[in-house]
Amino acid sequence: MKQPAVYIMANRRNGTLYVGVTSNLAQRVWQHREGVADGFTQRYGCKMLVWFEVGDTMEVAIVREKQIKGGSRARKVSLIEAMDPGWNDLFG
Image 1 (cartoon, rainbow, N blue to C red):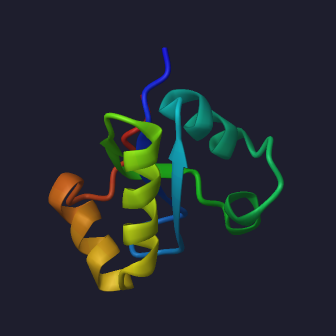
Image 2: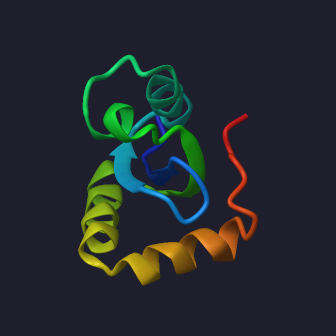
């Protein structure tokens, strides 16, 4: 089942962050964790899902992704810590 979502992956608490958007969060996080796609998350070891937000449509999710990407690191950390104060891996 497809469900648009924006998400943040990290390599450790207060480490490198990656913001992405997908129509299948579970599958996409699995891809990041397994390193099946070359790119930023594989290079920096961003394998922990530390924040996500489900959207009604892909268009809304893409707008939200751009908003988050354009924001400061402090804002991203605030989003993470509001949902996941311990920076636990939310996958699973």
